Length: 255
Image (tube, rainbow, N blue to C red):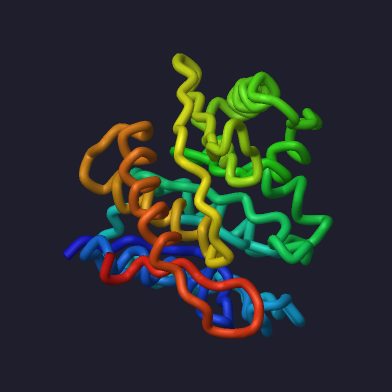
C-alpha cells in the first residue's frame, strides 16, 4: 500500500486539517502518514485557540521506516516548522502539494505574521501550490475581480517561484460557475464546475490538495491530477453533512 504524508494542523471538529486529509487519503485506498504542526480548539463556528507543535522529530523518523509516495503540506503556522520542513524537503523526490494556508474561512489567521515571509521559501521546492483567492491576492498584490486577474496572478506566482500554481476559485463566481485557474509556465487552463449551493464546505481546500497528492502518486501529470481531484471534491461537497450548528463538512468517504 502506498503511503501519503500530510504535514498539517489538527482540526478538533474533524472536518479539515489532518483529520480531513486522512479521510481523503483513505478514500483513495492509500495509507495516511501524519506530521502535526499545531493543535486547534475549534468547532463548526470558529477557531478558539491554536497551539503550535514542533514538527522536526515527527519528520525525522519518517525515513527510517516508510517509503513516501506523495506529500501534502497544509498549515505550518510557525517559522520553526517552516524551517524544519524546508530542510527535510531537500531530500524528497516524490510529488509535493502545498496548500499555503494563511487564513481560515472564519477569518482566523492560520500562520504567525513573522512566518509569512519564510513560507515563501517553500514555494520553489514543491510540485504545485494551491492558494485560494485571498491568499493569491496577498502573495501577488493583485486584486482579483475578473478572470484576467486570475490569469495575471497565476503568471506572477509562477514567475516568482517557478512552480506550477492552481488558484482556487470557490469564491470567484462567473455565470454560476466556480472557476479554478492553473498555470505551469507553458499553458493556462481553466477548470469550470457548476457552482454548488451548499453549506457543507468545511474542509474543501484540504480535501482538494490531499486528493491532488493522491492522484499524483499514479504518475499523472499535474493538470490530470487536478482534474481527478476536483471530481472527488465535487462529490464530497454534494454528500456533505452537518455535525454542529455552523458550517457542515465535506464527506469524502464512501463516495
